[in-house]
Image 1 (cartoon, rainbow, N blue to C red):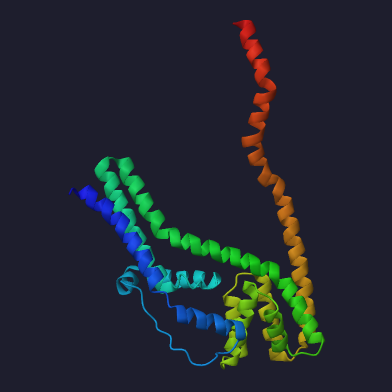
Image 2: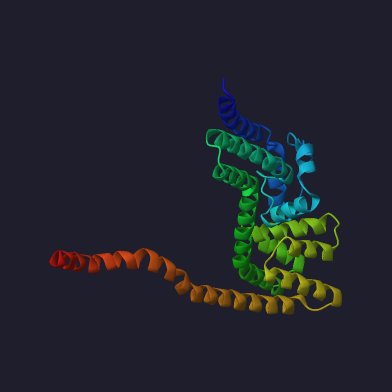
Length: 292
């Protein structure tokens, strides 16, 4: 067989084998145990969790700089650390996709050797290498937007619970139990950190580090200051809830003001040309026929 045929076979077999291996080696028991702990807040019994590192993980870590790995870990934290794509699997997947891009680039250059083929091959390799980064970053951005929308309502629920006589942590637990979004999961994780013995200030600061929403960071700072100086938590929650609602209204007004500018370019490029053709087309045809 020719080298091109071998490259085509490898480009088909390698990704299919990798994705089949990824599906087979998913630890179903670990996923079920983690979901149970997140739903209840407590570990029910003892479950033996097996941790199978992905294949070629050591080689992939050597190819990935430490600062870049830390950035990927931060993006995964913002995205909620999806179970289908942990950090070791992400680090292993990126060189595998880059290898597929190199195979297609070699096939393209062999078929038509030219500078354009080299540029296309390099661009394809770079695109496949950074494709997981784009997906994780986009997932994190959407998740943070969801947290930003849920935050004022969650603060209102915590304020009502505190004014009804509950403690702050009990109010947080009640608000997180009645919600199902990413903000509820983050609050539940913060409570779990406190329950396992982590200092309250560190647990709240970790909550702020897992979010890029300014309202969450302001809320964490206010709660830490209130806990340090003995300020009434009800007053803090009332002020934070009012500020969060004002910011959400201002954000909605800002998006409404940007809407006409965003609609302008599709209007000019897609609607106006067709409208001009429909209105001026018959007149232009008659003028051409008259002067011809």
